[in-house]
Image 1: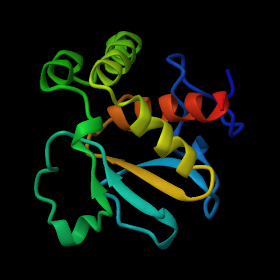
Image 2: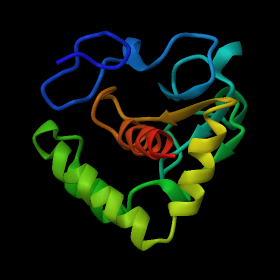
Image 3: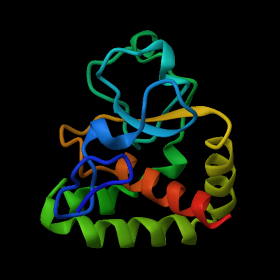
Image 4: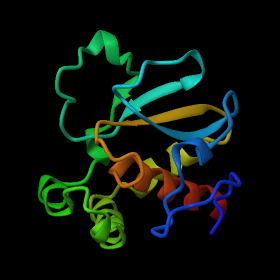
Amino acid sequence: MVSPGGAPADKTGADSLEARGPVGRTGIFVKRVYDPPAADDGERLLVDRLWPRGLSKERAQLAGWRRDLAPSDALRRWFGHDPARWAVFRERYRAELAAAGKGEDLRVLAERGRTERITLLFAAADPNHNNAVALKQFLDEIGAGE
């Protein structure tokens, strides 16, 4: 399987970090919040429910913290970043966002990604199985459908 960026995707459908988009272009990207901020990150949005351990607000250099787009504590704990639960996690996460009425927020973010560079930040150690990756996939689907 090959991702849209041309890099091989893993068996779960998650692309590698390198395949998530060329540097300097507009779009929605994901990055670990502990990685140093870069000039081409664009708008940096933390999309985790919990603040990352040991990270100061100054070092994070966030434009915003979208806790409202993070999965519930119960779903986050159930998932536990277990790749075997990835597909079900994505389904449940999408359902939570819909039930919370976040459709319009997602549509607006996807639309902004067409003209701006937005980086969704996550704290999880697994770069391929986390809520930011799932959220990016949802936003890409919304953007493709418009």
